Amino acid sequence: MPDRVAVLSDIHGVLPALEAVLAEPDVAAADLIVVTGDIAAGPQPVEVLDRLAGLGERVCWVRGNADRELVEARAGRPSPIGVSNWAATQLRDDQVGRLAALPLTVTLEVAGLGPVLFCHATPRDDEEVVLVDSRLERWAEVFAEVPAEVGTVVCGHTHMPFTRLVDRRFVVNPGSVGMPYGGPGAFWALLGPGVQLRRTLVDVDAACARIAAESTYPDAAAFADEYVRSRHSDTDALTVFAPRDGR
Image 1 (cartoon, rainbow, N blue to C red):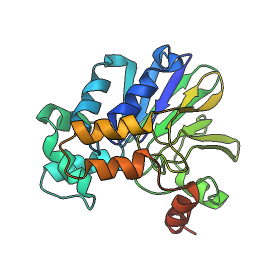
Image 2: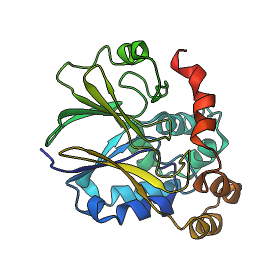
Image 3: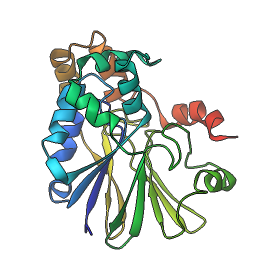
Image 4: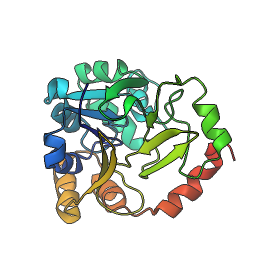
């Protein structure tokens, strides 16, 4: 049973942000790093996957919708997201195979928390939306098949950090490492024995310059300017996502 688990979600192929989080002392000292999906769909997909793979068994991987879409794009079913289609062409076969094998959920015992279920969007689907202000009925619906003994659910997908109680069950969204909504920085969470939401400061100018210089994605500079600089506020994101949570 790990005592400390660092949770990184929605890296989206942004290597400088990932490296900044991995350099955090509490991440370096964590017993386990759980990556909850949307790992490589971005301007540095090969480099991000290689960096995480280099950590070996210290990393537990969970599938996100963008990871699935990379595999599908590689098989000839294009994604509606341009950077995903480009990223799919960059990956090695072994990386595509790794993404194809990722599980929808992983449940682990974490010290102080008991069984924790990790997923990308919800425990039953890799792209449906739940938000901090979703109705309790909506949460009950998406948690309907979660075993009663699971007292904590960790999800990502919406790129906005939050914690809340849902009928005695604790829900944690660590936010996004590579595409934060609401302000710049790389957002993540530390579990055990409690839950801490964390934000790692990123040298945004340097990160954007590095992505533009090192990525061969044609729109790398624009991607970095929009997402690494966090041009979208949490209010913007909540307004866009709200219709997708069953309201």
